Amino acid sequence: MTRISDDASLREREKLDGRIAFVAAAFALAYGSVALLDRVGAPLALVEAVAPYFTVLAFAVLGALLHSMRVSTYYAAGRAVPFEYAGFALAALVAGLILPFAPQFSGRSWLFGVAGGVFTGVAAIGFYLGPMLRKTGAVSFSELLAARFPGVATRVGVVALASAASALIALAGEQSAVDVLAGVLGGGRGLSAAIVGCAVLLIAGPGGLLGTIWTAAAAGAVAVVGFGWPALMLALRDAPPFAGGADAQGDAAARLEDWGALDAAGPGAGVIVMLAVTLGIATLAPLLAPAIATQTTRGARLAGCAAFGWTFVFAFLIAVGLAGATLSLARQGVGQAPAHLPDTVYVASAHGLVTICGARAPDPASARRACAGKNGPAGAPLRASDFRVNGALFLTELPGLERMGAAASGLLASAQIALALALAAAGLQAFGTALGHEGIYRFRGKIDLTSRRLITTRLALLTVAAAGAAASASGVFDARALIAFALALSAAAMAPVAALAPWSRADDRDALYALLGGLSGMTVVILIAGDPRDGDVLAAAALAGALFGFGAGVWSALSRPAGSAHGRAFVARLTHGDGAVMEPEKGA
Image 1 (cartoon, rainbow, N blue to C red):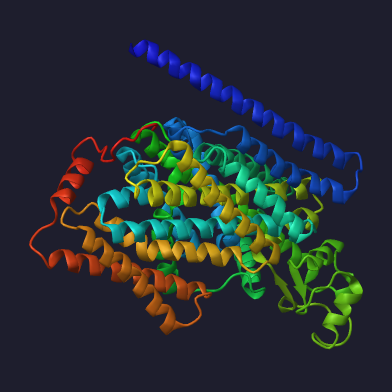
Image 2 (spheres, rainbow, N blue to C red; image 1 turned 60 degrees about the horizontal axis):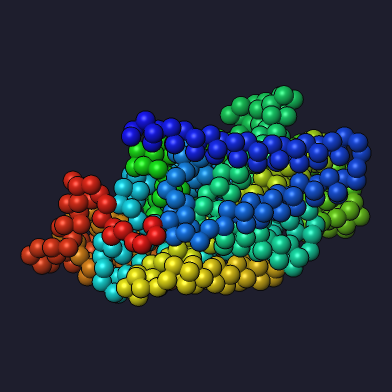
């Protein structure tokens, strides 16, 4: 029997590898054709646009082909994703999450701040929360917490928080993709938003978690090529930041600080940000989804190890690209007259990625007028302080500044769009699962038909995707702010509840106090400290909320003699038993 099972698993793996090889060959052929167009002298605008729009179309088709009406496939990807691909998909989602914070990774250190928090959070998912979630048999983190604390108020709060954070991530992913399509490639925002919204819906809607996981894995592959090609060209040319080592990295960080893309933070603020980001990432629903799709608990742990390594690779490539673009602009722009900058700088300024003397300057005459009287006599050389850059999106200007060709520019834009689409789809899928599965199906006593539940989930996805398209078209949100707020919500309210879950003494009331205490603590700090758009203020508020919420939950638990029988039995089975604390449902 074991031999038959092993042979079947081997055949399934061979089929899977064959399909992945086919998709990889299709992408390689398409991107190779773009490089060929560049070599034969096709119009630059065409060459730059083909790869990004092909990426959007290909991801939409891939998601649609992975459609399913099976509960186990839609909500858990059949729990059949090999750990290598699950870990790679998680790293791709994290890379999409950190793209708006790219300047933080081109800064001076990865030990603290956003970078340190990202790596610590991924480690927490990979080595603790991910395997625990897979062991229990839950289809989401909010479902596990709702089963641990089944009181109505606590369940509603947990599901609402997971839904809100996931929706924010979906909106941020859509906004990031539209920013690249419209801002970098020069397309109309309305059309770009409609294209991205339809693509995200086709990725997450028909196939649920199955479509999301495999699209994220494909996005990771596109990102490795898209970010790796320019980085390799810089290395072969011995150009900054590879030439100069640590000094070049310090120069890039200093320039980004001068240009308003990177805030200088002291050690204390860096530690606070790191802790807040760690808690936020570790409890963020979309990032926990790949662990659910793995085959075993051991597979979830191995996926976490793979994710940690690939996250480092993605962060390194992103940091190198942005540092290279920064140093290239400084080398070619600082000390030059406003009317004698490289054409790429004027194009970037026309798209809003660079400001010269505080204004957009799409041509030499505009730059001369903008700088007249601001930096000395007319035509005086530009100083470093005369430039400002849009940190994350400025990364796409590296190929133009270093004259790598339009194909490299289009491929780099494709990498950013691919990661943004994968992140948006993951947020959309997590939102649909929290609302359609935990928020409706579980509350109705599990009496809904499978088809009705999936239709409800897909309608919820349609609503958020449409809202994201409308918001992206008008540009009312900033992707970085949306992600920061989603992380803050998870850190302040979800993390304290998650910390109480393994404690047998804690019950529904304690979890509710932790959740409400976390939200209250975060709100109070924001009201006292000021603008929540300040990253340091939001991080401090999130960390304060987490500590206050956890303290409220512990105080509530210690104020009575003992915990509930349900809590003791749940924790005992989770920690010392088989761990399968979730009641199996029909179809899963």
